Length: 179
Image (cartoon, rainbow, N blue to C red; front, side, top):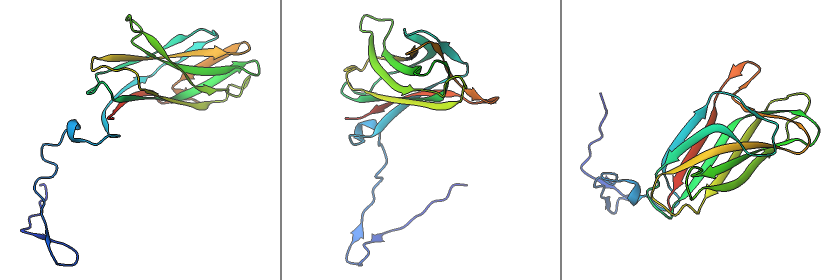
């Protein structure tokens, strides 16, 4: 059974007045939240491994769709997963976020989260990247996709969900931040 607190009056600390509380949260929704508030969150998970030896963008298979409440809001994109590299010293794996890749308005939002795993050992490292999309200017649904590439000398870059036989998930998240 849920608990309830019922009072007739709440007094100020010094006892000189009362504090009126009249359903302060009743009817609250995203439109009444202040700037800087996260007003929606969408996530996608990857449970497989993506590899590349290419210096061209390769899809990780991660994608999500978010429909912004406001055209001027910012979309905060984050991704967290594991990375390994095998190859020459200097091999760097990077993540790229794309917006609406299958439409006329497709655009790369840039490369983020470069990682240089311990090469030739396959040592596992956490790979985390984040980016703010401040230019979507729409309330239509937006698809975001995650790509990766292997830059530098020859080698293989792995982006995946397990290390030492322990499975996890690569998590891709989009959060709408009210402006």
